[in-house]
Image (cartoon, rainbow, N blue to C red; front, side, top):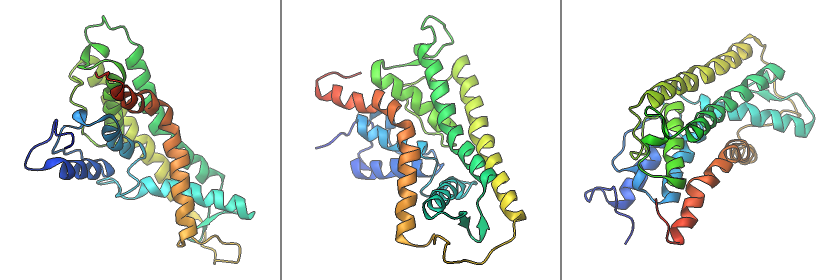
Length: 253
């Protein structure tokens, strides 16, 4: 058994789920099944993949800068723990680099959550508005709006098809979200790159925290989970997570 809704028989459940994960780990956007028809937690997986900022495969045309931002932040935290100025690839990580990394990390959730919140509280009577575009209400409706802005901001392109996005409101706000999600992340990353390029390389010392060890890998994953995932956990708890429990109580949307 399993949930075959929205999936083609020739692909089946496993291949459809794999494709959904891969297409949202990178900024691909192609789909071979309807993500909107997944179970609540199943639909949450591609949503979280995009919300973390393409940290697994990297973005198409963007590369690895999504995870490098978290690397810079992790190196800074490691430097605080050993009591030395953090270093990465022989370059000191200083206040400016951390400010830019923090800005790049905050741009995504601020954009997604702000537009999602405005869309939810807008009057339903407005013809070009947000709630009138929903095919589903309740927690799943919130998931559809959240997925739309996450996909647009994250340079993905996939969607929860229950949302009719061809309205004045969504055409406008999704376009602005695309603009912010691209340039307001790329600009801080370029600022970090330019700042590091001007610095002189320093040889490693006993106080240098190695970034090629399992310990740093664990630290990096922890930072991604704590900084990235916990930032979006509150809205996820109001959308796919609560929908999961409502589904088991017999309520669907």
